[in-house]
Length: 567
Image (cartoon, rainbow, N blue to C red; front, top):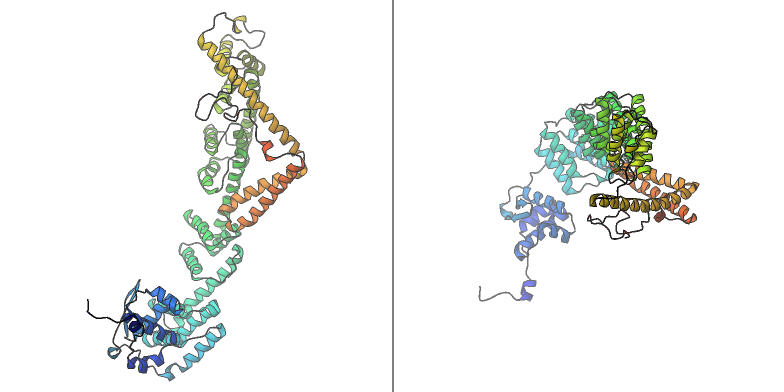
């Protein structure tokens, strides 16, 4: 370290030296902000302050992009060398050695061009700064593009962007045309003829989607992409009409779906979209029947609805099977298994399917009577098939119910019923009077521990079943009272409809979420008012179980028996 240094006061009074050659030759031709940028950068060279380009731009009160452009200008003049652009790092060069000053241009060469340029920009409400004009003239001087061709570029973007017009944007577009070897008036005119045609398409497309803005370059890029994929304009319009509201991004997803399906013509697109909408509605309808919540129908359409359609099942057939599936605890996969089994058996026509459903409904009613006669019997596809087997053996409902009564108190009522009916079938017993006396359960003085435990288990199950039924009866009474009120029914219907629309909007129309959410909240409020008027609440529709620990099932969540059972 040196034995001497500047005092703080001395350092604060230090100076930044500017070469006179810069003041004489470059300062008069440069824009004011360009000079400010140059001088501030020169000051930082000698001050030793650690300041990056973005903070320098903030201190100067100009955008960072503009700061970088000004250093590009000084680099063209040979006064600096931009060593890095991200992050920005600039090396200052001696002014005396500068050889890159833009060559002088003859004013008369660009006199007419300047008049036309200023007229175009004036109509657009855009002011042209000296530095920006210098960049334009340098582009024309050093490049092959004709003046009239460049004016055509300016006119196009002036009409599109108005006062938001950017010289940088114009120059970027002009450079792109030059790279594509389009620099004559005729070539540029031909290029923008395509743009004007696409602009007309976008102006027709935007209202269908509820878009109210000027077309952007990204919009033209999407049109070009769809065109390259062979999709007709009419097919794109059909997609927009199907969406009703959305963005260009959501439209691109739907058009991409057409491309993936090999659909390109307008007629084919309309047919595909109609089928698509019908399948989506079918998925939502099936979900309502099964009590399953579906937000995005597309996976269900592709995995199930399309397959069912190919198998020959109509919408009515699928909905009839869905209504049946609700009683059997079906989800989409279980419903699909049922449909596949029917198809394998040749039962695909709507009349046959409905006849099948009617037969299963009768079996379900019979199963309900069996449950009442013999106790708890699980309502499932397997149980229903067992009842169907008994009917196939030729037993009447009365005989089956007799077997159910005789099975009351058994540890496993259903297998016991099957044992009795099997014996009766082998013995040719078809009426209750013909049942042999030995077929009735015999009382025994001695009972094994297993039998005693089985009976205790049955008693326990009946005890909890009665408690659950009691809790459900309270709910049914409350629902019965509420559903007699027109206000409650109307609000509940509006709430159900709104929740379904909300689920659809999350996928197809996100911009409608706010409006639909407001309607749902209003319906929920009216439903609450109706309940308050009836002296009811939403809690009345939830079963109030005697035991909160096991919810009247007799078993805790971890599988252990609950201690609420008496005795």
